[in-house]
Length: 534
Image (tube, rainbow, N blue to C red; front, side, top):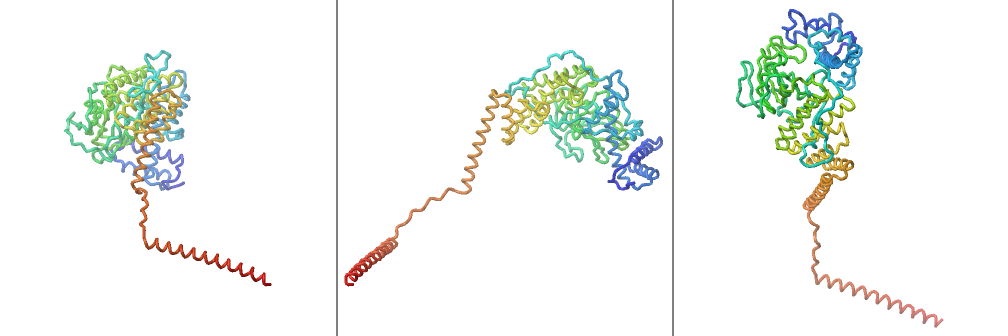
């Protein structure tokens, strides 16, 4: 059996590692009280006693990190399959559905560690808790689902698109899958530790304080509001970052008053924030992960005070009536459509930041996890709301001169519809502003292919041609200035001596020719007289 950390692991080793971890970490006496180095030392000792090999503690910890990630993804897949299991389907159908969800979240990789799963599935971390009823796809029509205009006009809030990095979130979680960085961008901090903030400290609770990094707008969420937020979390004692939704591209959904116990302090902070606000929160361990901490994911030591960097994207008041997971398809699309229309109204008032928050909230209702379940007309209904939101966000970004983000939003729409004229037009316009004229021209030409009568496209192509001509003339002048003008020939100065010598040489030349002709004449006369004499 291989012993080094880099070698392949056998099924027996993986199962043994899982058994040792469960036994040590869930010990009824010391399991929750021991620190991580002590835990892994005991796991290593037990592992070596069972198999007799020489794998190091570090190799065991690294292997467990990989297994734990797969277990969480499989748990989420099972949870999603269980929530969507229809009546009459059996457990084998659930397993097949779970495998489909797992493949989608892990780049078409299948879950194969069923022996290990049987060992750990009883642990609290991996227990499956249902989300509620599945999404209901009934045949009732959706009221006022907007149709995206086919024409392209400047300033129309329905036609712009924006940049985003956008990926499937782990299955089974309620968090929003869209990356909220496309509204406010990545936090300015480097991620090595909590940001340094000089603003006034607000005491929200005996164990919770807040410092505002960026002001928000509007009202604050009330109890039972559904809040969408991004956050980073560090343990204050060690500075260890254990959670980052910006990095994971997974905004968190939190219902105030129904949050998990370890999120109590975070919920207190969020309830004091306005939409668009970013703040630094300090939460005592009593309102965080408590005396026990968390030995699984996320890994938080016992008695750990926590620092959160939080941005509240937006929230839905309780009048929506239910959580997203409890809504039917029409209800979710309807809620998204209302957000989109509200965003359009704000766009017309030039309140671009607020408009983008409404568009992102709309996208939160119909994110990738939701779209993955839809086919045929249901998918078309959702795209009729989702794509205009991305296009509208791109319009906002172009107005704010955030062109790279606008390109990202357009790319999301083009992934679903590669011939979308508005997405091509906005992407081309953003690229042109960034100086990427060749790529911009390619976008405009492709857009013109599908909308040859659009004057806006023709105008942009004309502007590109004029720009290229101006750049050429400017470069021509620049290079002319570098190498200097062509020198003019200097007039030759007349010299009498040179003229005299030219005349003298010419005379000498003609005298030579004269003497040559004279000698030739005398020679011919001499020969003729001699022939007469003979």
